[in-house]
Length: 424
Image 1 (cartoon, rainbow, N blue to C red):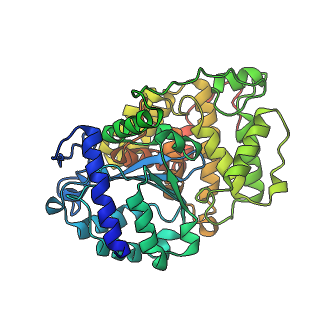
Image 2 (image 1 turned 180 degrees about the vertical axis):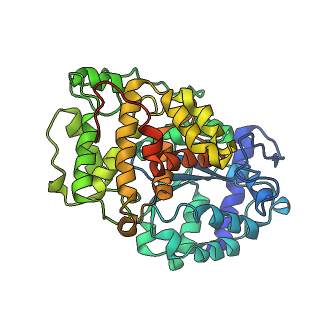
Image 3 (image 1 turned 90 degrees about the vertical axis):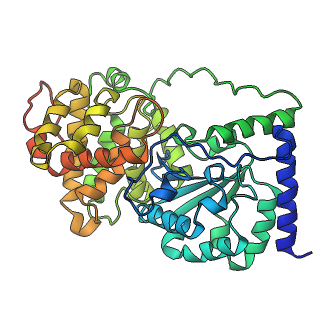
């Protein structure tokens, strides 16, 4: 029996086991339910693929890398889905993000004989994703791997580069993902969550129990990450601009304005974690020692993303979402109206940050970071909905609003004079 036959045999065994575990008898449901937003409108050439929600964008992880989720359980039966068109939609989606670092999370549960693409399609798909797609892929997490997956790996080994192979990590349970990515950002289908609970129950020999969330720890005396602006201000004797922002912005203005791809590249995760730890312990950080301008850039994004409440506040989320419906000639004025509604402290910090991003954009001939590019990076770090990550449909207005703030900084922010305002 060759590897391909072995893979098919293993797949059939796993499918039968799933029937038994799920109590499905001899029939397997092939219906696909998806209640999230469709990222393209009805007339889009990929609408018939996108409507299933197989591919989802889940914002950025803790280190500024875009999270892209592929859910097998949302794949309809093969006769209802053109797999070549699915490949086209995958490339169409990735094309929007591959210029920056990104992560793929592959949710294997739900792959059935009825919806499984052929092995030849998988081989051609891998070859289709050339260096452009693989270069900035930082990790591929395969969730709930089975023997079928491991046999597939052996089939593909001859065409998979060693460098790409090192990016693949098997994840047996959803909770294990928390070691690698910001789990709260992930869009996990309910079918996958139930499957995960059953696997854990089988492992422990009991009934599934909901995961317990440990009580929040009190912040350290010098905590900088994961605490509110008010907490930071109180601890800093009224200093309006948080320490992490002041130090990263100061370094980047002096040393990195012409660094190509500033804010679009990730940095060593271990180094970023260590710097966060040092900040939280009140230690002095000297970015010159690290010899990498992308490290303070990632630290700045991480700081914003770990605020308990977004800098632009969840109260303004719906108003920011509506910017796309405003006539283009009126959008700058509308942005001014929206930021005027920010609490005074938030306004000062936002103004400080946007002023800096405006300065970065003025060097775009060197750093390639136009207001539009900066908006794509910072938008999701400035505003997010009160529950869950922003959907793919929500990103265009967020990015548009952020781009307008950066490009028209003076018109939008010079209209309001505040006591003790700290300018960059």
